[in-house]
Length: 174
Image (cartoon, rainbow, N blue to C red):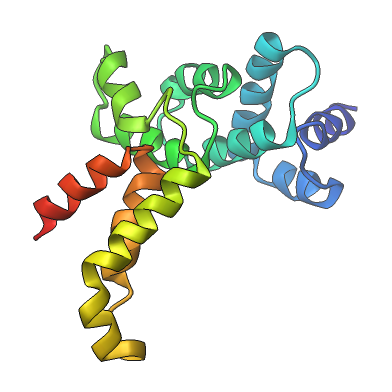
């Protein structure tokens, strides 16, 4: 009966029934995901949207220190962490800061909590990156190192920085 309850709990997070059954085969993962789902439901009510469920699954599958589960679930459930890059930054932060207490202000800054990036900011960051490398891009064309264009734009999407910060980041890299 517990298996049926876990399958319905996991499908309630947005997992397919097949993925939920596969998850149950990994006892450590299923226990951590079950705990994360229950904690999230305490905050959100009985329904957890698919985006939140995906983040919870990513958290449960990649978190190495179960002591941090409640802390990170609270950020996900309260929509303070709502993207995969933010979750990756949060997991990296707790890995690199294993001792208590966690400096929440530093954690939130590193994870981009409270920051959102608009499509206009992304477009502006791409334009800045292209314009900075336009002469080299026109000469080298298909041989141009696209990493030079993508890194500053990815930085904006990860950190939610303004385009002014893209310029500072690029200057730091030069």
